[in-house]
Structure formats: C-alpha cells, structure tokens
Length: 132
Image (cartoon, rainbow, N blue to C red; front, side, top):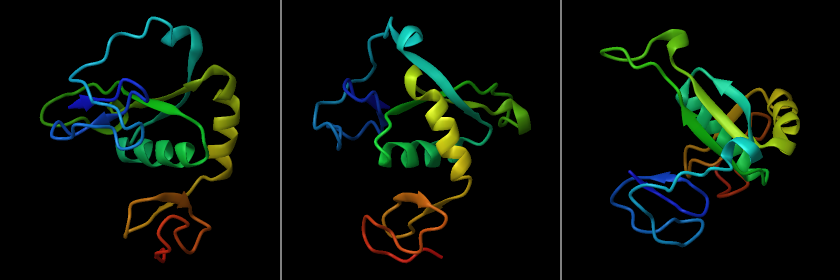
C-alpha cells in the first residue's frame, strides 16, 4: 500500500500520486505524535465497507477523516463483532459528525462512478447517474 503525506489516504501500491492532493505517495507515513491531541473517534463501525462509505460521505461534506482498522484477525477471517473500524476526525467535529451520520443513516453509492450520497438522492450529483 502507498500513503499520501498530506491527507494520509491509503492507495494501491501501483499508484504514484495522490489523486486529491497531487503529491507523491510514500510507502509508509511518519508517526503523527499530535494525533491523540487533535483527533477524536467519531464512530466505530463493525463493517469495513460501511466505514469507507461513511468516510466518503463525510469527505463529500467537507469533513476530513481517517479510518483505523482495529479488527481482531482470526483465521480464516474476522467474524461478527471482532471486526471494527474507527473513524477519526477533528475533536471539534466529533459531535457534528455523529449527528450528521445519524441524520443520514442510509447511504447510496453511484454504480457509475462510486460517489457516495444520501439514500434520499435519486441521481448522482457528481456524474448524473441514476441511483437504483
């Protein structure tokens, strides 16, 4: 995996540049000693795919966030409540994020471009594709 030093996003190793920040990706990131002081856990999600959907939704709302997989991996795969992903955001945004996600409990993903939107949307505001 490759990582963006700006947004701290995770990308496939064959990618060379972050598509959002347009900076060169790195094999690993330097530890962020201020993480605990400036970030807080907004949500803990038990399904990894839902964590990515929620992250996409929040970022489309202008709220930067990071995912931390804290799953207990038992062979052959994690089961039930052993799968956990924490969604970190700025401490001052934690309560807002919780209310925002609660208000938009269901999400829709565009099958054409992968953009995440609210379940109430009927068309993708990114590419114009129809939601099922």
